Image 1 (cartoon, rainbow, N blue to C red):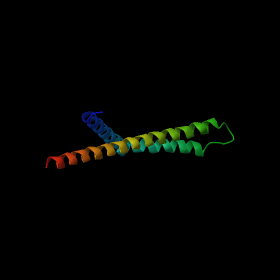
Image 2: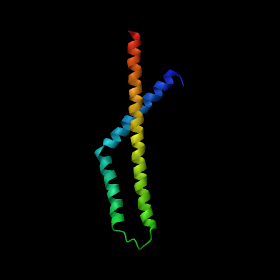
Image 3: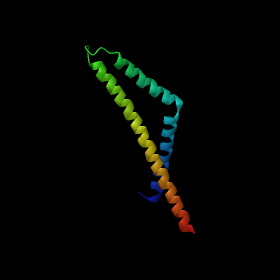
Image 4: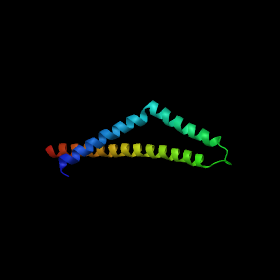
Length: 99
């Protein structure tokens, strides 16, 4: 990958990370995630364990899916932060070399 392609990729990762951060920071997203988790916990809390445990497994899988999505968003944010830092470092190095 040449320098321009690498820079374009880093800029794309930076933008993607910033967009992911805006999603995570959005109050509607935070409310939805809290509500989803709350509904799942309420179902688990009130479920009769002597019955079919498939419903419990379904709820646990739902929680795991929510956690995986959150983890993926956090990874995108970290990658974006790393890309931005790399772009800033390259820009600073370029300025130093021009002196």
